[in-house]
Image (cartoon, rainbow, N blue to C red):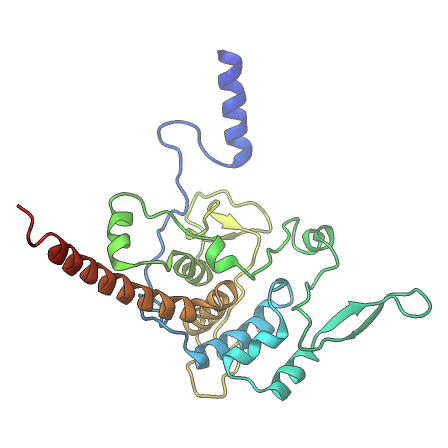
Amino acid sequence: MKTVLKVIAAFGLVAGVTVGANAAEYPLIKPVEQDWSFAGPFGTYDRGELQRGLKVYREGCAACHGLERVAFRTLEDLGYSDAQVRALAAEFEIQDGPDADGEMFMRAAIPSDYFPDPFPNPQAAAASNNGAAPPDLSLIAKARAVERGFPTFVFDIFTQYAESGPDYVYNLLTGYEDAPEGYEQQPGTYYNPHFLAGTSLSMAPPLQEGLISYDDGTPETVEQYAHDVTAFLMWTAEPHLEQRKRMGFVVMLFLVGFAGLMYLTKRKVWAGAH
């Protein structure tokens, strides 16, 4: 039994948590709910916000994070023309081949291509980022979420709350702060109490005031950048959200109407029965 306990304790130390009744639960600070245009049963994407979010991704995130599940052609859904999509795709290089000599080569991307990963392989990505490979962001807004626990999740069923992932991503991007006094921070990491897997992470604060210029006069603040890029990442994770919600509304109307017809039919069939 003592051996088993020692193994469990050792695992807890390696994982960076404290074993026992006072074990830390992450994140230390739960995400604060944000106001999203796509929230609720009738929510829709704000195309202007998505275009700004794409700009933030290209200029602030693409150097480390890929979008391997997103094709350039789908950017037309954000309001871009075919010519604009082709011009945007051409900013990226894609490995293609082999050519007639059997060699791989690089070429400008076209709309049918997918966003490339900035690193050739996970090992190279980890080596360039303090040992931690940056994750692909295609599905990050749906893959990362903080459990809200009881009884909050019960109310979420009735309020149709489904933005836990975007709320977490936004709070993480805006939640960097100085480590508290006495905190032993590992070299090369940055303190963030909103992080889901600990109290610090290898990613440096990716956003700064005035880092990216907006052409529409939108405030160039960290909060605005984080909000825009999070909305964009929600779109990459669920591009058909609007169609799903429209179909869901039609289905609900059908079910209500069908239930009414069934009730009237039952009244008619059994009207003369005693």
